[in-house]
Each structure stands twice: as C-alpha cells, then as structure tokens.
Length: 284
Image (tube, rainbow, N blue to C red):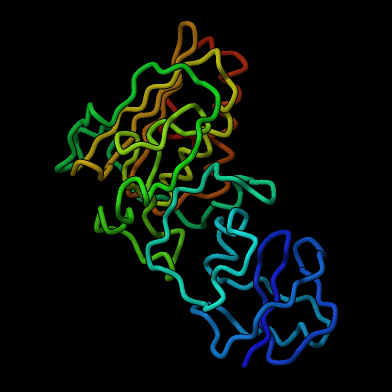
C-alpha cells in the first residue's frame, strides 16, 4: 500500500511508502491533503520517500497532476483508482481554472521538426473551407463544452496519430478550436479539428496575446487530410492595414519556451504598432 497526498493549489500528487505528518507542496508550500491510499503506483508515478524524511519532494510526472491538465481538473478525487483513459484530450486551453493558467505549463523541450514553407506541399492535405474562418473580429470568450462530447470520440482516435495520453500527454493529440473560445469561437463540430498537443500550444501562445484585442480580426485557414484531421494552420491577425501571419504544423511535437517567447514577443510588438506585414513562420 502507498500513501497518497494531493496539493489543493496545483493539484500535484505525491506518493510515499510511509505516512507523513503535515507534508507540504514543493511548488507553492501549500499543505498537502491526505487522499485514499492506493495498492499500486499509477503509470509514470514514482515513490517519493523523501517526503517522510522532511526533504524537498520531487514533483511526480503523473499525467493528470504534472501536465497542463493539473490546474483544471476537478477538486474531488476523480482519479482515485489511478486509471485514466488513454485519450483524455479535452482541449483545455481556457477551461475553468482553480489556479492561474500560464502558457509555460504547456511548453516542451527539443527541436521542432522540419516543415514545408507552403501547406500545399504537404502530401494529402487540402484547404478545408468548411473548417476555416475568415476575418472574424475578436470577441468576448464563448462558453465551453467538452470537445470529446461534441465530436463523439477522442482526437487521437480520429486522427490515428500521437501517443496515448497516459504515456506522454505532450506528444498526444487534442481537439483544437480553429477559432479559440477565448476569442469568441464556439464549441461546435465545425470549429474543432484534431491536431498535436504542441500545435494546440502554439495556437494558445498567440491566443493569450489576442484575448480582448477587439480592434483586430482573425483568419485561420485549415489544411486537412480528413474531414476533422488537421495538417496545417495558416493563422492571420488583421490590423487596419497590415497582417501578422503564422504557419503552424498540425503534427509538430515540440514547442519550447524559447519558441513561445519569440512568437509572443513578435505578436505583442506588432499588436502595439501594426504598421507592417509580419510573416512569423521562422523567428529563430
């Protein structure tokens, strides 16, 4: 049997082979809640006996607790069995949150994969007019529904790509809003496509900068290889006279903090003074 503890602030789980008196979270120093003991460690969890020795515990790489999803999961002990579905991909970019969201939660390590400069060069990809949006003015955040509930399956089941969520959340597939709900997009089938976690992160990095920028319009052209399976996004932000453009690889499985900082920095500078055309495909 293993004792289990949960931080009420960051939702991180800790495990120990011995009971611990008054343990605290390494991330925010919050007192940990004592949860129901488990007979077996969940996949990817590690035994942290340093808790019992009053040493600084390490954060467990448990998917629900240590990934981006940790900050929006329900406050109850909804995963007490230690089991999760392989394809839990609810596109949680702007879901209701109990702790403050920051895009840094979603960044990965490593280099991005090579990508054609023109989505027309991607074999099997066609411009999907039905999924694309053109010149939509940024609006108030729309209500959110479960993407999996709307689409009737997981993004990974639809695309046949990526790893199971339990194995590696940041290399899984997610349902992506073409027009983000934070910008006024609705949770309907026509506004969802399956794409990689990192493609969703790249879009999210732009969307957190665009939220509330109601003087601007957004266009997103979507290239798909099947009705709901994205291969590329051509994201454009329209100012009074000029446009900020970004081509996004829908299969990309790397998007680092440096990538995010470069993209957000370029977009924020342009939003403050949109006096020129910017093609932000390569900001290295």
